[in-house]
Image (cartoon, rainbow, N blue to C red; front, side, top):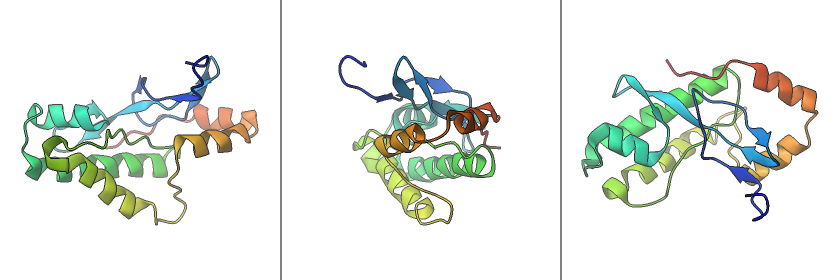
Length: 150
């Protein structure tokens, strides 16, 4: 990946919201397994995984948007009140289930990006910020427990 010019990856799962780490020169933004209230179990917080787990990838748009919003809100609260790690919202920006997951992502971003002490940023912006930090500070953040929604 590094030889191809990539600087970050988001393909590895983690059990909760976790601070990015640098692996072989690539920033890894972990895809968190989070509690999905509508399912009473953990799922990787990505639109396709949620779509499959919530309804076996059928087009029942009525339940997907709300269930996804509740999942995002729970993960955000866990990170905000816990380790303050960057929260990865895995969304392919497609029209699955009539755009239910894009609506959930847009609604969630509209809610949280305006909150105090919350910064919505791209991977590139986060990696730039992390590159400027004292490594000891980042090590302290990474030593905190992974954020888990209840």
